[in-house]
Length: 378
Image (cartoon, rainbow, N blue to C red; front, side, top):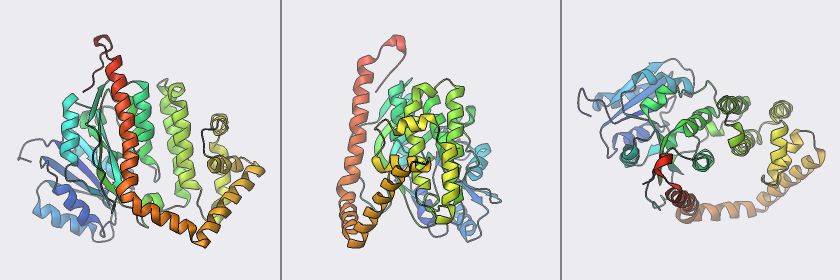
């Protein structure tokens, strides 16, 4: 980045006690093939050596700036960077993950092609093979309801899977709510539904790392935050007259996140879990669960939370079967084989399904495009 010139991309990294992985993350960021970047590292009251690591890197690379603040959580850390953003586009990374070297360049040029509000891409799990890109970027002006549903349900809801045009981010006040789990979902939904120009890079460009301290693996009462987040999403949908258009996607995503965060908890939290889920499940959720679109064990879990004893028995039988297979070693063998295959085949297969869906969307957009509607695709 040349002195006095606004960078192409601002990369925001919230940092809290990330000393074990921070150097690897920063190396992947500073080695981007697009070097016209600024890196805003928000130290969120770290008590380990994270701040010292940041200062070491800042002394060696003028593109990295440090924002130091008391601990307030990942949302407050990300939001603290907003007054300092100077890039045309903004990207959020996590301090324990890694970026593909070409992430910024590919997302930037895909977004620049149509001045996209949002550019989306895929991410992979750290330590696994990267699947080859299967299609060329898709660029859409005035995306229709079908494409927006695709973005909401098939693109990862975290900010690490998206490039945001900074003006779009600030003009729409796309800040992160003060929750510990699921906080990024509100930004995901608002961005996907408010964006007028969208680009999709059908390629894995970000590498997520799971470890014992990951937010997604931490459990506890904070997992109930996701209930509050999806209430905010519902308020947004109703306020913009969009709830009926996206009802099914909303219900599927809400139940998916509730199950992900709440199905495995300490027994001491079981009474509170049942109470909170009973409060969170309304008529819409039960209609969806009975529609046949939810997996059987998934349905039984939620129906048991609503007091259905037969569903509770079926769910306990499901868990017992899974534990039995684990004891026999069959579940371990199945997971081991899947992991061995995942590096070469499963990730590629998963992304191929997504890319096939993108190709169909592309064909539909081209077929339905007309100057009067103002839609364009490249």
